[in-house]
Length: 586
Image (cartoon, rainbow, N blue to C red; front, side):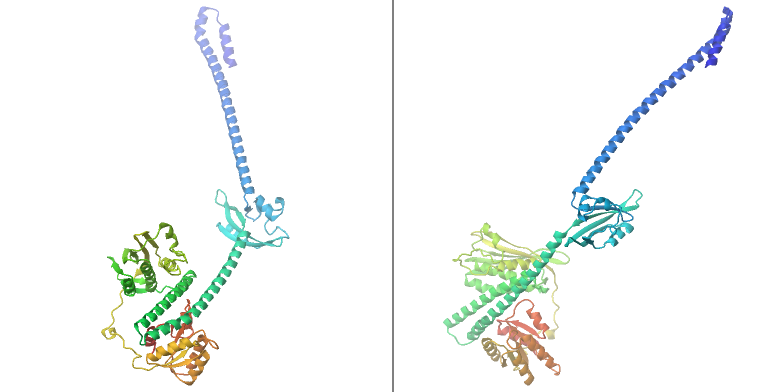
Protein backbone atom coordinates (compact mmCIF):
# COMPACT_ATOMS: atom_id res chain seq x y z
CA UNK A 1 0.00 0.00 0.00
CA UNK A 2 2.92 2.36 0.71
CA UNK A 3 4.24 1.73 -2.83
CA UNK A 4 0.96 2.98 -4.32
CA UNK A 5 1.18 6.15 -2.24
CA UNK A 6 4.84 6.76 -3.26
CA UNK A 7 4.01 6.22 -6.93
CA UNK A 8 1.16 8.71 -6.73
CA UNK A 9 3.40 11.31 -5.03
CA UNK A 10 6.09 10.89 -7.65
CA UNK A 11 3.55 11.41 -10.45
CA UNK A 12 2.25 14.59 -8.84
CA UNK A 13 5.78 16.00 -8.64
CA UNK A 14 6.31 15.35 -12.34
CA UNK A 15 3.37 17.57 -13.39
CA UNK A 16 4.86 20.80 -14.61
CA UNK A 17 2.26 21.77 -17.19
CA UNK A 18 -1.24 21.01 -18.36
CA UNK A 19 0.08 18.59 -20.86
CA UNK A 20 1.93 16.72 -18.17
CA UNK A 21 -1.30 16.52 -16.18
CA UNK A 22 -3.22 15.18 -19.18
CA UNK A 23 -0.61 12.50 -19.66
CA UNK A 24 -0.51 11.38 -16.02
CA UNK A 25 -4.16 11.98 -15.14
CA UNK A 26 -5.37 8.50 -15.99
CA UNK A 27 -2.54 6.80 -14.12
CA UNK A 28 -3.00 9.07 -11.09
CA UNK A 29 -6.73 8.31 -10.96
CA UNK A 30 -5.97 4.60 -11.01
CA UNK A 31 -3.62 5.01 -8.07
CA UNK A 32 -6.24 7.02 -6.16
CA UNK A 33 -8.89 4.38 -6.78
CA UNK A 34 -6.55 1.67 -5.69
CA UNK A 35 -5.80 3.58 -2.51
CA UNK A 36 -9.55 3.98 -1.87
CA UNK A 37 -10.18 0.32 -2.48
CA UNK A 38 -7.42 -0.63 -0.10
CA UNK A 39 -9.02 1.49 2.71
CA UNK A 40 -12.48 -0.06 2.08
CA UNK A 41 -11.09 -3.53 2.44
CA UNK A 42 -9.46 -2.60 5.68
CA UNK A 43 -12.59 -0.94 6.87
CA UNK A 44 -14.64 -4.02 5.91
CA UNK A 45 -12.24 -6.34 7.58
CA UNK A 46 -12.28 -4.21 10.69
CA UNK A 47 -16.03 -4.07 10.79
CA UNK A 48 -16.33 -7.83 10.14
CA UNK A 49 -13.86 -8.53 12.87
CA UNK A 50 -15.87 -6.44 15.29
CA UNK A 51 -19.05 -8.16 14.20
CA UNK A 52 -17.55 -11.64 14.62
CA UNK A 53 -16.32 -10.64 18.02
CA UNK A 54 -19.83 -9.58 19.02
CA UNK A 55 -21.29 -12.86 17.76
CA UNK A 56 -18.69 -14.87 19.63
CA UNK A 57 -19.31 -12.85 22.78
CA UNK A 58 -23.04 -13.40 22.38
CA UNK A 59 -22.54 -17.13 21.86
CA UNK A 60 -20.26 -17.33 24.85
CA UNK A 61 -22.80 -15.55 27.00
CA UNK A 62 -25.60 -17.84 25.71
CA UNK A 63 -23.55 -21.00 26.20
CA UNK A 64 -22.55 -19.94 29.66
CA UNK A 65 -26.20 -19.31 30.56
CA UNK A 66 -27.34 -22.66 29.17
CA UNK A 67 -24.50 -24.45 30.85
CA UNK A 68 -25.36 -22.76 34.13
CA UNK A 69 -29.00 -23.79 33.70
CA UNK A 70 -28.08 -27.41 32.92
CA UNK A 71 -25.77 -27.55 35.92
CA UNK A 72 -28.49 -26.06 38.09
CA UNK A 73 -31.09 -28.58 36.83
CA UNK A 74 -28.63 -31.45 37.23
CA UNK A 75 -27.96 -30.41 40.79
CA UNK A 76 -31.72 -30.17 41.37
CA UNK A 77 -32.27 -33.66 39.98
CA UNK A 78 -29.38 -34.97 42.07
CA UNK A 79 -30.86 -33.36 45.18
CA UNK A 80 -34.28 -34.84 44.40
CA UNK A 81 -32.75 -38.28 43.83
CA UNK A 82 -30.79 -37.97 47.06
CA UNK A 83 -33.93 -36.93 48.97
CA UNK A 84 -35.88 -39.81 47.40
CA UNK A 85 -33.23 -42.43 48.13
CA UNK A 86 -32.73 -41.26 51.69
CA UNK A 87 -36.42 -40.83 52.48
CA UNK A 88 -37.91 -44.14 51.38
CA UNK A 89 -37.86 -46.86 54.08
CA UNK A 90 -36.50 -49.48 51.66
CA UNK A 91 -32.78 -50.30 51.62
CA UNK A 92 -31.36 -49.16 48.24
CA UNK A 93 -27.86 -49.96 46.98
CA UNK A 94 -25.83 -49.86 43.74
CA UNK A 95 -22.92 -52.23 43.03
CA UNK A 96 -20.27 -52.29 40.31
CA UNK A 97 -19.25 -55.35 38.31
CA UNK A 98 -16.90 -56.40 41.13
CA UNK A 99 -19.93 -56.50 43.47
CA UNK A 100 -18.58 -53.51 45.44
CA UNK A 101 -21.01 -51.03 46.93
CA UNK A 102 -20.97 -47.78 44.92
CA UNK A 103 -23.98 -46.05 46.47
CA UNK A 104 -26.22 -46.82 49.45
CA UNK A 105 -29.09 -44.85 50.91
CA UNK A 106 -29.64 -43.74 54.49
CA UNK A 107 -32.01 -46.61 55.34
CA UNK A 108 -29.38 -49.13 54.21
CA UNK A 109 -26.69 -47.45 56.33
CA UNK A 110 -28.97 -47.36 59.38
CA UNK A 111 -29.92 -51.00 58.99
CA UNK A 112 -26.32 -52.19 58.55
CA UNK A 113 -25.35 -49.89 61.45
CA UNK A 114 -21.99 -48.96 59.90
CA UNK A 115 -20.72 -45.58 58.58
CA UNK A 116 -21.20 -45.08 54.85
CA UNK A 117 -17.43 -44.71 54.44
CA UNK A 118 -16.98 -48.28 55.71
CA UNK A 119 -19.53 -49.64 53.19
CA UNK A 120 -18.66 -47.90 49.90
CA UNK A 121 -16.03 -49.78 47.90
CA UNK A 122 -16.52 -53.04 49.78
CA UNK A 123 -18.40 -56.24 48.98
CA UNK A 124 -20.92 -57.87 51.25
CA UNK A 125 -18.32 -60.47 52.20
CA UNK A 126 -15.86 -57.71 53.16
CA UNK A 127 -18.30 -56.18 55.62
CA UNK A 128 -17.92 -57.54 59.13
CA UNK A 129 -20.48 -57.02 61.83
CA UNK A 130 -20.81 -59.11 64.93
CA UNK A 131 -24.55 -58.53 65.34
CA UNK A 132 -25.65 -59.30 61.76
CA UNK A 133 -25.53 -62.67 60.01
CA UNK A 134 -26.92 -62.69 56.46
CA UNK A 135 -27.73 -65.77 54.45
CA UNK A 136 -25.75 -65.81 51.23
CA UNK A 137 -27.68 -64.84 48.13
CA UNK A 138 -24.62 -64.26 45.91
CA UNK A 139 -25.96 -66.71 43.32
CA UNK A 140 -28.82 -64.31 42.63
CA UNK A 141 -26.47 -61.32 42.20
CA UNK A 142 -24.22 -63.41 39.95
CA UNK A 143 -27.15 -64.36 37.71
CA UNK A 144 -28.27 -60.72 37.45
CA UNK A 145 -24.75 -59.56 36.58
CA UNK A 146 -23.87 -62.35 34.13
CA UNK A 147 -27.23 -62.92 32.41
CA UNK A 148 -28.67 -59.41 32.66
CA UNK A 149 -32.00 -60.62 34.10
CA UNK A 150 -34.00 -59.34 37.04
CA UNK A 151 -34.43 -61.33 40.26
CA UNK A 152 -37.48 -60.69 42.39
CA UNK A 153 -38.64 -61.64 45.90
CA UNK A 154 -35.37 -63.01 47.23
CA UNK A 155 -36.13 -63.82 50.86
CA UNK A 156 -33.32 -63.59 53.40
CA UNK A 157 -33.37 -64.61 57.03
CA UNK A 158 -30.96 -62.90 59.39
CA UNK A 159 -30.23 -62.41 63.05
CA UNK A 160 -29.74 -58.90 64.45
CA UNK A 161 -29.34 -58.12 68.14
CA UNK A 162 -30.62 -61.61 69.01
CA UNK A 163 -33.73 -60.99 66.96
CA UNK A 164 -34.79 -62.87 63.81
CA UNK A 165 -35.46 -60.56 60.88
CA UNK A 166 -36.57 -61.16 57.30
CA UNK A 167 -35.69 -59.21 54.15
CA UNK A 168 -37.23 -59.33 50.70
CA UNK A 169 -34.90 -58.14 47.90
CA UNK A 170 -35.33 -57.29 44.21
CA UNK A 171 -32.26 -57.05 41.93
CA UNK A 172 -31.87 -55.58 38.42
CA UNK A 173 -28.88 -55.04 36.08
CA UNK A 174 -27.59 -51.50 35.31
CA UNK A 175 -26.49 -50.91 31.67
CA UNK A 176 -24.67 -48.10 29.83
CA UNK A 177 -25.56 -46.53 26.48
CA UNK A 178 -23.83 -49.40 24.67
CA UNK A 179 -26.12 -51.85 26.51
CA UNK A 180 -23.19 -53.16 28.53
CA UNK A 181 -23.78 -54.28 32.12
CA UNK A 182 -21.87 -51.97 34.45
CA UNK A 183 -23.38 -53.05 37.75
CA UNK A 184 -26.63 -53.83 39.53
CA UNK A 185 -29.19 -52.06 41.67
CA UNK A 186 -30.99 -53.65 44.62
CA UNK A 187 -33.95 -52.73 46.79
CA UNK A 188 -34.71 -54.58 50.03
CA UNK A 189 -37.67 -54.38 52.38
CA UNK A 190 -37.94 -55.46 55.99
CA UNK A 191 -40.79 -57.98 55.90
CA UNK A 192 -40.40 -59.21 59.48
CA UNK A 193 -43.89 -58.00 60.48
CA UNK A 194 -45.38 -59.82 57.49
CA UNK A 195 -43.57 -63.01 58.46
CA UNK A 196 -44.80 -62.72 62.03
CA UNK A 197 -48.33 -62.21 60.68
CA UNK A 198 -47.95 -65.30 58.46
CA UNK A 199 -46.83 -67.36 61.44
CA UNK A 200 -49.79 -66.10 63.45
CA UNK A 201 -52.10 -67.01 60.56
CA UNK A 202 -50.60 -70.52 60.43
CA UNK A 203 -51.14 -70.93 64.16
CA UNK A 204 -54.69 -69.59 63.79
CA UNK A 205 -55.28 -71.99 60.91
CA UNK A 206 -54.08 -74.91 63.01
CA UNK A 207 -56.34 -73.83 65.86
CA UNK A 208 -59.25 -73.39 63.43
CA UNK A 209 -58.62 -76.83 61.93
CA UNK A 210 -58.46 -78.32 65.41
CA UNK A 211 -61.69 -76.49 66.23
CA UNK A 212 -63.28 -77.80 63.03
CA UNK A 213 -62.06 -81.29 63.86
CA UNK A 214 -63.52 -81.00 67.36
CA UNK A 215 -66.75 -79.63 65.91
CA UNK A 216 -66.93 -82.45 63.36
CA UNK A 217 -66.27 -85.03 66.05
CA UNK A 218 -68.96 -83.46 68.21
CA UNK A 219 -71.42 -83.52 65.33
CA UNK A 220 -70.50 -87.12 64.58
CA UNK A 221 -71.10 -88.11 68.20
CA UNK A 222 -74.29 -86.06 68.34
CA UNK A 223 -75.50 -87.63 65.12
CA UNK A 224 -74.77 -91.12 66.44
CA UNK A 225 -76.41 -90.50 69.79
CA UNK A 226 -79.54 -88.96 68.25
CA UNK A 227 -79.87 -91.44 65.39
CA UNK A 228 -79.68 -94.45 67.70
CA UNK A 229 -82.87 -93.68 69.69
CA UNK A 230 -84.46 -92.19 66.57
CA UNK A 231 -83.90 -95.50 64.82
CA UNK A 232 -85.79 -97.11 67.69
CA UNK A 233 -88.66 -94.63 67.37
CA UNK A 234 -89.04 -94.90 63.60
CA UNK A 235 -88.34 -98.63 63.55
CA UNK A 236 -90.92 -99.42 66.17
CA UNK A 237 -93.43 -97.08 64.49
CA UNK A 238 -92.83 -98.93 61.22
CA UNK A 239 -93.30 -102.31 62.92
CA UNK A 240 -96.38 -101.09 64.76
CA UNK A 241 -97.87 -99.72 61.54
CA UNK A 242 -97.72 -103.20 60.02
CA UNK A 243 -99.90 -104.66 62.78
CA UNK A 244 -103.69 -104.57 62.98
CA UNK A 245 -104.60 -101.11 64.28
CA UNK A 246 -107.73 -99.04 64.63
CA UNK A 247 -108.04 -95.84 62.61
CA UNK A 248 -107.20 -93.77 65.69
CA UNK A 249 -104.16 -95.91 66.41
CA UNK A 250 -103.09 -95.58 62.78
CA UNK A 251 -103.31 -91.80 63.08
CA UNK A 252 -101.20 -91.86 66.23
CA UNK A 253 -98.55 -94.04 64.56
CA UNK A 254 -98.52 -91.79 61.48
CA UNK A 255 -97.99 -88.73 63.69
CA UNK A 256 -95.20 -90.58 65.46
CA UNK A 257 -93.56 -91.47 62.15
CA UNK A 258 -94.00 -87.98 60.71
CA UNK A 259 -92.47 -86.37 63.81
CA UNK A 260 -89.55 -88.77 63.67
CA UNK A 261 -89.01 -88.08 59.96
CA UNK A 262 -89.10 -84.33 60.63
CA UNK A 263 -86.49 -84.76 63.36
CA UNK A 264 -84.36 -86.74 60.92
CA UNK A 265 -84.63 -83.90 58.37
CA UNK A 266 -83.41 -81.42 60.98
CA UNK A 267 -80.45 -83.65 61.87
CA UNK A 268 -79.56 -84.08 58.19
CA UNK A 269 -79.79 -80.30 57.66
CA UNK A 270 -77.30 -79.65 60.45
CA UNK A 271 -74.93 -82.34 59.19
CA UNK A 272 -75.25 -81.18 55.59
CA UNK A 273 -74.50 -77.58 56.53
CA UNK A 274 -71.49 -78.65 58.57
CA UNK A 275 -70.11 -80.75 55.69
CA UNK A 276 -70.64 -78.04 53.08
CA UNK A 277 -69.19 -75.33 55.34
CA UNK A 278 -66.09 -77.48 55.94
CA UNK A 279 -65.73 -78.12 52.18
CA UNK A 280 -66.09 -81.86 52.71
CA UNK A 281 -69.16 -82.49 50.61
CA UNK A 282 -68.64 -84.49 47.44
CA UNK A 283 -70.66 -84.04 44.28
CA UNK A 284 -71.32 -87.22 42.29
CA UNK A 285 -71.76 -86.12 38.69
CA UNK A 286 -73.46 -88.45 36.26
CA UNK A 287 -75.90 -88.27 33.36
CA UNK A 288 -79.54 -87.99 34.42
CA UNK A 289 -82.85 -87.07 32.88
CA UNK A 290 -83.55 -83.44 33.81
CA UNK A 291 -87.28 -83.82 34.42
CA UNK A 292 -86.92 -86.99 36.56
CA UNK A 293 -86.14 -85.32 39.92
CA UNK A 294 -88.88 -82.73 39.27
CA UNK A 295 -91.50 -85.44 38.67
CA UNK A 296 -90.29 -87.35 41.74
CA UNK A 297 -90.71 -84.22 43.85
CA UNK A 298 -94.22 -83.83 42.48
CA UNK A 299 -95.04 -87.43 43.45
CA UNK A 300 -93.62 -86.88 46.95
CA UNK A 301 -95.19 -83.50 47.75
CA UNK A 302 -98.40 -83.29 45.72
CA UNK A 303 -100.36 -85.18 48.42
CA UNK A 304 -98.97 -82.92 51.13
CA UNK A 305 -100.04 -79.90 49.07
CA UNK A 306 -103.51 -81.36 48.60
CA UNK A 307 -103.84 -81.84 52.35
CA UNK A 308 -103.48 -78.04 52.69
CA UNK A 309 -105.91 -77.42 49.84
CA UNK A 310 -103.11 -76.35 47.48
CA UNK A 311 -102.53 -77.26 43.84
CA UNK A 312 -99.02 -78.22 42.71
CA UNK A 313 -98.07 -77.70 39.04
CA UNK A 314 -95.07 -78.52 36.89
CA UNK A 315 -94.15 -76.30 33.92
CA UNK A 316 -91.36 -77.72 31.76
CA UNK A 317 -90.20 -75.02 29.37
CA UNK A 318 -89.30 -75.37 25.72
CA UNK A 319 -85.81 -76.27 24.49
CA UNK A 320 -84.93 -78.08 27.72
CA UNK A 321 -82.20 -80.69 27.29
CA UNK A 322 -83.46 -84.20 27.97
CA UNK A 323 -80.28 -85.23 29.79
CA UNK A 324 -77.64 -83.31 31.70
CA UNK A 325 -74.52 -84.31 33.62
CA UNK A 326 -74.38 -83.32 37.29
CA UNK A 327 -75.32 -84.37 40.81
CA UNK A 328 -78.97 -85.35 40.54
CA UNK A 329 -79.38 -85.80 44.30
CA UNK A 330 -78.08 -82.31 45.19
CA UNK A 331 -80.11 -80.69 42.38
CA UNK A 332 -83.20 -82.46 43.68
CA UNK A 333 -82.34 -81.43 47.25
CA UNK A 334 -82.42 -77.71 46.36
CA UNK A 335 -85.70 -77.95 44.43
CA UNK A 336 -87.26 -80.07 47.18
CA UNK A 337 -86.26 -77.49 49.77
CA UNK A 338 -87.81 -74.62 47.81
CA UNK A 339 -91.06 -76.52 47.19
CA UNK A 340 -91.26 -77.63 50.83
CA UNK A 341 -90.90 -74.00 51.92
CA UNK A 342 -93.54 -72.89 49.42
CA UNK A 343 -96.03 -75.43 50.80
CA UNK A 344 -95.14 -74.50 54.38
CA UNK A 345 -95.72 -70.76 53.88
CA UNK A 346 -98.71 -70.90 51.52
CA UNK A 347 -102.23 -71.20 53.01
CA UNK A 348 -104.27 -71.10 49.81
CA UNK A 349 -103.83 -71.03 46.06
CA UNK A 350 -101.16 -72.94 44.16
CA UNK A 351 -97.46 -73.62 43.71
CA UNK A 352 -95.77 -73.89 40.32
CA UNK A 353 -92.39 -75.48 39.58
CA UNK A 354 -90.93 -74.12 36.33
CA UNK A 355 -87.81 -75.10 34.39
CA UNK A 356 -86.18 -72.91 31.75
CA UNK A 357 -83.08 -73.28 29.57
CA UNK A 358 -81.22 -69.95 29.82
CA UNK A 359 -78.66 -70.94 27.22
CA UNK A 360 -76.49 -73.73 25.88
CA UNK A 361 -73.07 -73.94 24.29
CA UNK A 362 -70.94 -76.80 23.01
CA UNK A 363 -70.24 -78.11 26.50
CA UNK A 364 -72.83 -76.88 29.02
CA UNK A 365 -76.45 -75.97 29.71
CA UNK A 366 -77.56 -73.23 32.10
CA UNK A 367 -80.87 -74.22 33.69
CA UNK A 368 -83.14 -71.96 35.74
CA UNK A 369 -85.62 -73.44 38.23
CA UNK A 370 -88.38 -71.26 39.67
CA UNK A 371 -90.82 -72.13 42.45
CA UNK A 372 -93.72 -69.67 42.52
CA UNK A 373 -96.30 -69.63 45.31
CA UNK A 374 -99.37 -67.59 46.25
CA UNK A 375 -98.32 -67.21 49.88
CA UNK A 376 -98.01 -64.21 52.16
CA UNK A 377 -94.92 -62.81 50.46
CA UNK A 378 -91.77 -61.41 52.04
CA UNK A 379 -91.16 -57.78 53.04
CA UNK A 380 -88.17 -56.15 51.35
CA UNK A 381 -86.36 -55.50 54.65
CA UNK A 382 -86.42 -59.22 55.51
CA UNK A 383 -85.13 -60.61 52.21
CA UNK A 384 -81.50 -60.23 53.25
CA UNK A 385 -82.06 -62.75 56.06
CA UNK A 386 -83.36 -65.50 53.81
CA UNK A 387 -80.11 -67.19 52.79
CA UNK A 388 -78.17 -66.60 56.02
CA UNK A 389 -77.22 -69.51 58.27
CA UNK A 390 -79.54 -70.15 61.24
CA UNK A 391 -81.63 -67.13 60.23
CA UNK A 392 -85.44 -67.20 60.35
CA UNK A 393 -87.88 -64.53 59.20
CA UNK A 394 -89.96 -65.12 62.32
CA UNK A 395 -87.88 -65.94 65.40
CA UNK A 396 -90.49 -64.89 67.92
CA UNK A 397 -92.00 -67.22 70.51
CA UNK A 398 -95.31 -67.08 68.62
CA UNK A 399 -93.96 -68.12 65.24
CA UNK A 400 -96.20 -70.49 63.27
CA UNK A 401 -93.57 -72.49 61.34
CA UNK A 402 -90.75 -74.58 62.73
CA UNK A 403 -87.28 -75.22 61.33
CA UNK A 404 -83.58 -74.66 61.82
CA UNK A 405 -83.28 -71.79 59.38
CA UNK A 406 -80.66 -73.81 57.48
CA UNK A 407 -82.63 -74.95 54.43
CA UNK A 408 -82.07 -71.90 52.25
CA UNK A 409 -78.49 -71.46 53.50
CA UNK A 410 -77.72 -75.04 52.46
CA UNK A 411 -79.45 -74.47 49.13
CA UNK A 412 -77.34 -71.38 48.51
CA UNK A 413 -74.10 -73.26 49.20
CA UNK A 414 -75.16 -76.14 46.95
CA UNK A 415 -76.14 -73.76 44.14
CA UNK A 416 -72.74 -72.03 44.37
CA UNK A 417 -71.05 -75.42 43.95
CA UNK A 418 -73.26 -75.94 40.88
CA UNK A 419 -71.84 -72.63 39.53
CA UNK A 420 -75.20 -70.89 39.79
CA UNK A 421 -77.07 -68.19 41.66
CA UNK A 422 -80.11 -68.20 43.93
CA UNK A 423 -82.57 -65.44 44.70
CA UNK A 424 -86.15 -64.46 45.41
CA UNK A 425 -88.72 -62.08 43.93
CA UNK A 426 -91.51 -61.32 46.35
CA UNK A 427 -94.19 -58.82 47.28
CA UNK A 428 -96.16 -58.95 50.53
CA UNK A 429 -99.66 -60.27 49.94
CA UNK A 430 -98.89 -61.44 46.38
CA UNK A 431 -96.66 -64.43 46.92
CA UNK A 432 -93.01 -65.25 46.23
CA UNK A 433 -90.89 -66.76 43.49
CA UNK A 434 -87.74 -68.48 44.64
CA UNK A 435 -85.35 -69.27 41.80
CA UNK A 436 -81.90 -70.63 41.19
CA UNK A 437 -79.64 -71.38 38.24
CA UNK A 438 -77.30 -74.32 37.75
CA UNK A 439 -74.67 -75.03 35.13
CA UNK A 440 -74.59 -78.62 33.90
CA UNK A 441 -72.38 -80.39 31.42
CA UNK A 442 -74.19 -81.92 28.48
CA UNK A 443 -75.49 -85.39 29.25
CA UNK A 444 -76.28 -88.46 27.16
CA UNK A 445 -79.23 -90.81 27.23
CA UNK A 446 -78.36 -94.29 28.57
CA UNK A 447 -77.93 -97.02 26.02
CA UNK A 448 -80.94 -99.30 25.69
CA UNK A 449 -80.45 -102.69 27.28
CA UNK A 450 -80.85 -105.86 25.24
CA UNK A 451 -84.30 -107.41 25.48
CA UNK A 452 -83.06 -110.23 27.71
CA UNK A 453 -81.67 -107.72 30.20
CA UNK A 454 -84.43 -105.17 29.93
CA UNK A 455 -86.89 -107.19 32.02
CA UNK A 456 -86.92 -106.38 35.74
CA UNK A 457 -84.72 -108.64 37.82
CA UNK A 458 -86.44 -111.14 40.07
CA UNK A 459 -86.11 -110.88 43.82
CA UNK A 460 -83.12 -113.06 44.67
CA UNK A 461 -84.21 -113.24 48.30
CA UNK A 462 -87.77 -114.36 47.64
CA UNK A 463 -87.09 -118.07 47.57
CA UNK A 464 -83.99 -118.10 49.77
CA UNK A 465 -83.95 -118.00 53.56
CA UNK A 466 -80.84 -115.99 54.39
CA UNK A 467 -78.91 -116.65 57.57
CA UNK A 468 -78.15 -113.13 58.83
CA UNK A 469 -75.76 -112.17 61.64
CA UNK A 470 -76.81 -108.86 63.20
CA UNK A 471 -73.92 -107.27 65.14
CA UNK A 472 -75.54 -104.63 67.36
CA UNK A 473 -75.07 -103.57 70.99
CA UNK A 474 -78.32 -101.61 71.38
CA UNK A 475 -81.21 -103.77 72.53
CA UNK A 476 -83.90 -101.71 70.79
CA UNK A 477 -82.04 -101.77 67.50
CA UNK A 478 -81.57 -105.54 67.89
CA UNK A 479 -85.32 -105.99 68.20
CA UNK A 480 -86.09 -103.72 65.23
CA UNK A 481 -83.59 -105.43 62.92
CA UNK A 482 -84.59 -108.91 64.11
CA UNK A 483 -88.33 -108.27 63.67
CA UNK A 484 -87.93 -106.70 60.19
CA UNK A 485 -85.59 -109.40 58.88
CA UNK A 486 -87.64 -112.28 60.27
CA UNK A 487 -90.77 -110.77 58.74
CA UNK A 488 -88.92 -110.77 55.41
CA UNK A 489 -88.29 -114.51 55.85
CA UNK A 490 -84.71 -114.49 57.12
CA UNK A 491 -83.01 -116.30 59.97
CA UNK A 492 -81.43 -113.89 62.45
CA UNK A 493 -78.56 -114.35 64.91
CA UNK A 494 -77.58 -111.52 67.29
CA UNK A 495 -74.03 -110.60 68.36
CA UNK A 496 -73.74 -107.93 71.06
CA UNK A 497 -70.34 -106.63 69.91
CA UNK A 498 -67.57 -107.18 67.38
CA UNK A 499 -65.75 -109.80 69.43
CA UNK A 500 -68.89 -111.97 69.72
CA UNK A 501 -69.37 -111.63 65.96
CA UNK A 502 -65.85 -112.89 65.22
CA UNK A 503 -66.29 -115.84 67.59
CA UNK A 504 -69.66 -116.74 66.01
CA UNK A 505 -68.17 -116.48 62.53
CA UNK A 506 -65.53 -119.05 63.52
CA UNK A 507 -68.23 -121.53 64.59
CA UNK A 508 -70.84 -121.20 61.84
CA UNK A 509 -71.39 -119.71 58.41
CA UNK A 510 -73.64 -116.77 57.58
CA UNK A 511 -75.04 -115.50 54.28
CA UNK A 512 -74.69 -111.84 55.26
CA UNK A 513 -73.52 -109.78 58.24
CA UNK A 514 -75.11 -106.49 59.33
CA UNK A 515 -72.33 -104.69 61.21
CA UNK A 516 -72.74 -101.81 63.63
CA UNK A 517 -69.64 -99.58 63.94
CA UNK A 518 -69.56 -98.05 67.41
CA UNK A 519 -69.68 -100.88 69.94
CA UNK A 520 -67.98 -101.81 73.23
CA UNK A 521 -65.26 -104.50 73.48
CA UNK A 522 -64.57 -104.48 69.72
CA UNK A 523 -65.89 -102.02 67.12
CA UNK A 524 -67.17 -102.84 63.66
CA UNK A 525 -63.98 -101.89 61.82
CA UNK A 526 -61.78 -104.27 63.80
CA UNK A 527 -64.38 -107.06 63.67
CA UNK A 528 -64.61 -106.72 59.88
CA UNK A 529 -60.83 -106.85 59.58
CA UNK A 530 -60.61 -110.05 61.63
CA UNK A 531 -63.45 -111.69 59.67
CA UNK A 532 -61.75 -110.82 56.38
CA UNK A 533 -58.51 -112.30 57.71
CA UNK A 534 -60.32 -115.53 58.65
CA UNK A 535 -61.78 -115.65 55.15
CA UNK A 536 -58.30 -115.99 53.65
CA UNK A 537 -58.40 -119.68 54.48
CA UNK A 538 -61.93 -120.05 53.13
CA UNK A 539 -63.26 -120.16 49.59
CA UNK A 540 -66.27 -117.93 50.27
CA UNK A 541 -66.81 -114.21 50.78
CA UNK A 542 -69.49 -113.12 53.24
CA UNK A 543 -71.09 -109.73 52.41
CA UNK A 544 -70.82 -107.29 55.31
CA UNK A 545 -73.17 -104.31 55.35
CA UNK A 546 -72.44 -101.42 57.69
CA UNK A 547 -75.67 -100.65 59.52
CA UNK A 548 -74.68 -97.69 61.67
CA UNK A 549 -75.72 -94.38 63.15
CA UNK A 550 -72.43 -92.88 61.93
CA UNK A 551 -73.60 -90.65 59.09
CA UNK A 552 -70.88 -88.03 58.74
CA UNK A 553 -68.91 -87.28 55.57
CA UNK A 554 -66.41 -90.05 54.93
CA UNK A 555 -68.08 -92.67 57.15
CA UNK A 556 -69.32 -94.68 54.17
CA UNK A 557 -65.89 -94.54 52.52
CA UNK A 558 -64.22 -95.59 55.76
CA UNK A 559 -66.53 -98.59 56.04
CA UNK A 560 -65.81 -99.69 52.48
CA UNK A 561 -62.07 -99.22 53.04
CA UNK A 562 -62.31 -101.49 56.11
CA UNK A 563 -63.58 -104.34 53.92
CA UNK A 564 -67.35 -103.90 54.09
CA UNK A 565 -69.47 -104.32 50.97
CA UNK A 566 -72.08 -101.63 51.52
CA UNK A 567 -73.28 -98.97 53.93
CA UNK A 568 -76.66 -97.98 55.32
CA UNK A 569 -77.14 -95.28 57.94
CA UNK A 570 -79.68 -95.42 60.76
CA UNK A 571 -82.52 -94.89 60.96
CA UNK A 572 -83.21 -97.10 57.95
CA UNK A 573 -86.24 -98.51 56.20
CA UNK A 574 -86.46 -102.24 55.73
CA UNK A 575 -87.24 -101.76 52.01
CA UNK A 576 -83.87 -100.05 51.53
CA UNK A 577 -82.07 -102.85 53.37
CA UNK A 578 -83.87 -105.52 51.33
CA UNK A 579 -82.87 -103.65 48.14
CA UNK A 580 -79.19 -103.68 49.18
CA UNK A 581 -79.34 -107.35 50.14
CA UNK A 582 -80.92 -108.18 46.81
CA UNK A 583 -78.02 -106.46 45.03
CA UNK A 584 -75.09 -108.08 46.83
CA UNK A 585 -76.35 -111.53 47.82
CA UNK A 586 -76.07 -114.19 45.09
